[in-house]
Amino acid sequence: MTENEISYKVIGAVIKLHKQIGPGLLESAYENALSYDLKSLGLEVEQQVPMPFKYKDVYLEVGYRIDLMIENKVILEIKSVDRLAPVHFAQTLTYLKLSEKKLGLLINFNEKIIKNGIHRLVNNL
Image (cartoon, rainbow, N blue to C red):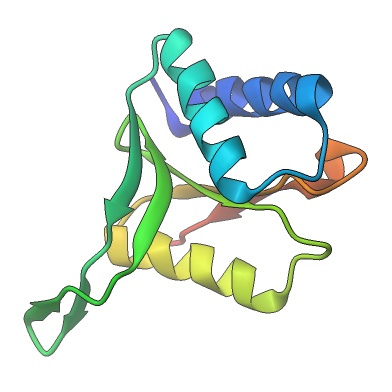
């Protein structure tokens, strides 16, 4: 499955989840519910994937974690905030670079209309 095919399924699941429970919950609630829904669709989902930081040929475990990794191809960074800040976009792009993945989805569930909270980010390897 390509990154675009995966993201199509993920976005569909995000929309259904948001329609059912709406905004206002903690990020962890959305992460766990979305993980369940994506697994139900037959997708391979990993939660809280450790992201080591490479510095001078040494991998350092510094506590970075990817919220959801789908099919080992697409990164999902989940937020539930009043407004996304530039740092949220930078964080997702950094995770893409460090993991050498092509596509990331930054999703802010704390939106009245969820399409306003879905952002596709591409790593130009």
